[in-house]
Image (cartoon, rainbow, N blue to C red; front, side, top):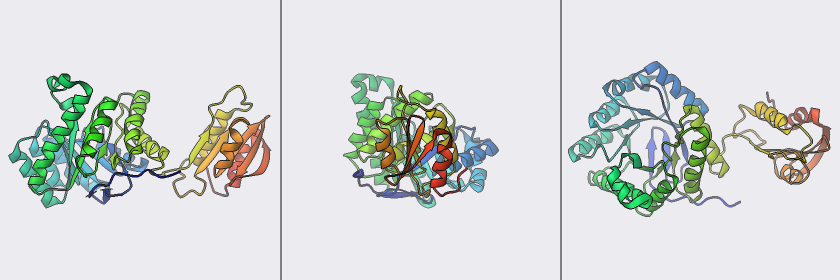
Amino acid sequence: MEGIERRKTKKVKVGDIEIGGGSPISVQGMTKTATEDVESTVKEIRRLKSKGAEIVRVGIPDLYSAQAIEEIRKKVDVPLIADIHFDYRLALICLEKGVDAIRLNPVNIFKFEQIKKIVEKAKAQKAVIRIGVNAGSIAVSSSEEKGNQGIAEIMVEKALDYLRILENLEFYDIIISLKSSEVRSTIQAYRLMARKCDYPFHLGVTATGFATTGLIKSAIGIGTLLAEGIGDTLRVSLTDKPENEIEVAKEILQSLGLRRFKPEIISCPTCARTSVDLKRIVREVKRRLEGMDKDFPYQKIAVMGCVVNGPGEAREADIGVSFAGGEGVIFKKGRIIRRVPEKDVVEILFKEMEWECR
């Protein structure tokens, strides 16, 4: 399978993570704690990192949150982004306290003198600025005039206006995001912006809702853009635990072949031809694979329930099993190596992988 040709962009560094310029597409998370609660916020950041977050954003709604950055910065080693709205002074404090980047909303921090002060501080701290435009921040009257396509155009105009200000101040360590809760508007905005600049993009569909709906909207919106080569870093936004956002983001990247984080299990949906308890078997395989990462030598594992697609999928995987008549046929690197009873399949499958798995 041919790889995705990614959009060529400038490269910036958020902490020690490179974004754009052909760098791996990074996974971001965002805390959902009150940032001023240092202990809770630090615990959440560490959980996000353990799940695979490479950059973490924290909301800064007030002075207490901004001041808390100093202690948070001392206790975590992941790059931090401060999410700033309305009060430019919060950005100055967060930069002074050691964040690696700040997110600014052009709709609510727009006065030139305020932007100039932030840029001066960002230059001194060698920090990145993300121009983060959200459809929800745009005046309702403006968006209603043109409909969904108009929303995308307005978001791009806002970002471009802000971009010109930063460039006129000779600041170029910039990332751009253009998020809407409407998938089509998000896709349209990024496509349009991709034709107008070469700065790296942070992808996301905002306010997507609870797990199932949010997962689908995020996968369609982010996945469509990634498949077109657009996007350099991303965050999945769910009304859910922040750790789950990281898992979904990683799945989107891995499903497109853009990153690999862990072994992939290929399993059929089951039907009347399935003669074994396939769901139980898949759950057990998944459990034993927990903790295995991209260095595990068997990255594609097939567990198939019948003879229609089973043998083909199992043969194409690094290792796999196809069931028929209560018996499992184990394939390894494209050839049949064993035929075993259903009850013994999982044990023998992992013995054949010659790896210590739990």
